[in-house]
Image (cartoon, rainbow, N blue to C red):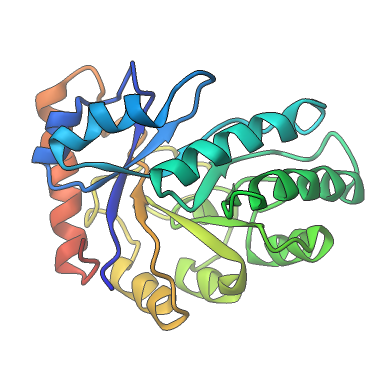
Length: 253
């Protein structure tokens, strides 16, 4: 089964690039920002005309918010209605102990798991800085519907002397979603280049994930100065170049 090539596209009313341009660039899926009140019908009406579908929903995760499980449950219901399998999110978790953070994330897993949708935590400090920290956090959370959204470039941004292929292999049991970014491999360098101009071996990352049975989407998270959202022509061209590079590396969609 081929993995869908997806694009982190913003919100339904404010896409980072028009859906028509995203589809023309060769993308098949969208990671969509969730907002209260958005319906599956509205999403499908906006995307299906362009041959696009939602592969994941994105929403913030302030763990101290007592209403968070309710919101995640609502988002998971929408994701399920759209055929998406996970919610992308990020939380620092440094404002509380690991045990307390784990307990709150378990409640999110309960809320989303009721719809058979996972919570996928981005490769960010403090809970998911690198594979070692991911495994520690996942052991504490210990919930079947809470896992990792592995980001191929963030492991370089937040760490020294690290290899993305080794990192994804080390945390593979917990991967629920994947963000693809290229990087020059420098610590705290936000200059993420067009795919193929950096050092991420996407084909090798794909091989690790494929061998582990990962069949969900590969979502391109294209950010940084190389991707100017104010110039639609330039951005569309760069999205298309990224898609073409992924296909050449064997990540077909």
